[in-house]
Image (tube, rainbow, N blue to C red):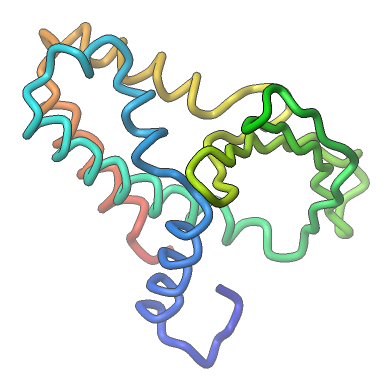
Length: 163
């Protein structure tokens, strides 16, 4: 993302390829739908997974551009089950007097390769927060997954705009 020789589109494409190779976006998307996953039509679920992928890619790219000088220092790991791990890290900012931030990664290996399925920043798990937000949004919109898809698509477009 820091390679200025590449165009913005090339950097975004490289980031998306990297992200989708490391993160189980489908698993996260299905989790964030909460109880609405069971009642939504299969076509709506697939459309949601695609909208979530686009939103997550735009959101993570937006976040990571703010952290170009920081480094992650692995401080430990915890095995929750034979295929479920938490990797603890510290986000160190050499340009700040603030203490390093705790960033934990939940990694699953049940798909044949390690993939990220959640990230916690200072103890707050992103997937849990997103599920709570999405379920609340769906509750306010009669459980209409298509409305959530449109909302995520709009957010993704806004996040992808150059700043």
